[in-house]
Image (cartoon, rainbow, N blue to C red; front, side):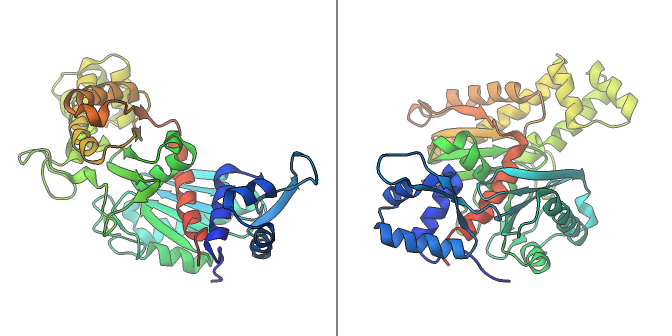
Length: 394
């Protein structure tokens, strides 16, 4: 595998400026980097020789000799792989992390890592054909599980049975011949928000990822914070009550056991069988099972039982956020992954708990909002993950 990337800090800063802000003139970049023109020219030539930077055309005139625009080279391609508990989502982006091609399909993670990772590699190959000829510069991978980032492996993942310590990074890198970075999905989506979402305007924010697995990505001081062993933000298995429901991790009373999609569905089935909800009961009788979409549909349709389930889950999640907000003091909390339609109900309940119970200093001007990226946060964040690695000094 041929390693590419900047050789010094100035090259790394240049690449990140072009990735984050798009094409810019040589004059603007020279000023932003604070480099002498001759030194700047040398660094650009070196990056161009690696196929990372190219001329995009003439810049707008500022008087005198016209400058040229520089951009991330058109042949740069980042792959994104987002493994969900029921879906595999694969995308290809350009160097500015705009999605060029994407494919999502249902998948059962219980088939094992070899099958799922193998399918992801197949889909990346197909997307490369769709997006046009270009080398694959790197691949970012998001897993719904704790990840040892240094090793590129999941660690005791409740949502991924049979995946423990499987070499996800090394398997994909060996097959595709490019750098690969693996992280948990909440961290990856936080990076997506930082690059292209509401988080772009904040140096300090929390991204709360809902779904079957619940997690939290922390961006502090403008950088993703992972903690000493990549375990920061694993809020899904904080214990809310010792005598609570059994969680997939084996403990009782975890946040996920109360607030995760699977938990809400389980509570909805119980309510339907007990005759407490006509809407849920009718759907259960017709389909033989319920999904989170069924719960969301009943809640938005005015079913009081479904609304109570959603609000109870949101209230418990709000209780967790009270502690996080007081401890971290973020500039904003962004919530993603909510089932379609129930975001406003969740948000209202969470805001009520957090604003009522948190210290005024921590929440006086802190917004709590729903993600405006939706399912784009995963692909953009995965591309950002690997580009951060590649656009760093070797």
